[in-house]
Image (cartoon, rainbow, N blue to C red; front, side, top):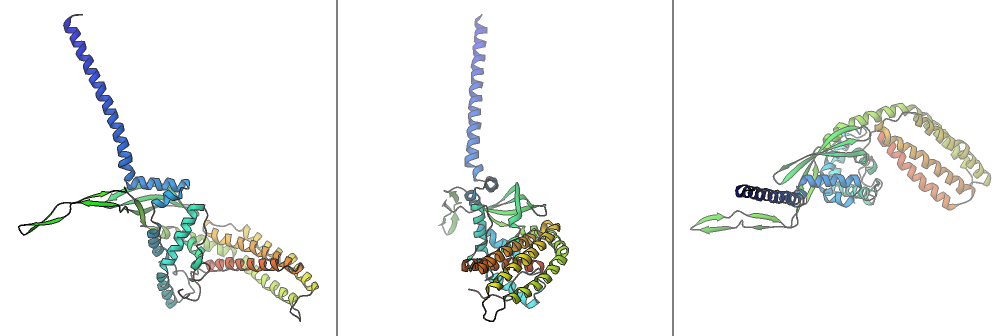
Length: 391
């Protein structure tokens, strides 16, 4: 090998090694840059926060989900959207009563939203929808919270996927594909996201004066705690309600019409059986004799309970549209609880058991709640007939 060839090969070898070193450095920089971008840039973006929120919701990670949703802010705006037509379909209210109730529900907005946050948090932690209790238990504020939750659609709405995130100055908007489970109506939900991190400090931004003229250096803001992107409002929740609710109301109206004859027929039978029940219990002393207790127990066992079962069997034969699921389940639960109440009553009077009589009374109260809810749904009632007093 001559000297020229040897030098040329040596030069090529150096160049190849240089290229290899540059390629290794480039790959290292790309990997390092990717890691840096992911952990120090992308994880601080609203898109990352929203994707993490959706994953957390699907996997039941309550704490992560809560970290990306400001439930207090969201429920306040959603409450306004939900109650904007709460009294629209209540045909039993006069214009004056409707106005009074609308104003009243503005006043109790804080209590109602606090209850909603409690309901959502309980669902996130346990996977079960419960009622808030306390001041919202029963009808102390004039509305049945269970019916309100059903109208909100929250209990039967499913998140599908994150569609898009757009950043605008200091806030962002995100869109999610969702579906209402009863009607299977798809919808694109739009939310506003804000960075609520407040561990920041500023450098500069101070004003000073030279020769009578004011100057100000531009300020730089640094966030010590990183980003804290949270959903603060659902922007088109009212649009979602307006899209789905009419379909569910139509389903409900059809079901009510299809079951009206059954309900009316058995209501007449129940009235007759109630008269017989009252007659069987009558006693000069006010206390039933042993024979009376036996007759009453036989009447309930052989007549009242079979009538309840027959009524429910006939209702079960009627196809239940998706929008009528809540009403149908209320009727089923009312029948179940009523039969349990009667059986406890039978045991109470035949075995002289105060505990069973107390159980019967408790179950009867539950039945009355179910029946009242069903009645209000049938008549499109939103509130109690009397304006409650603020506590």
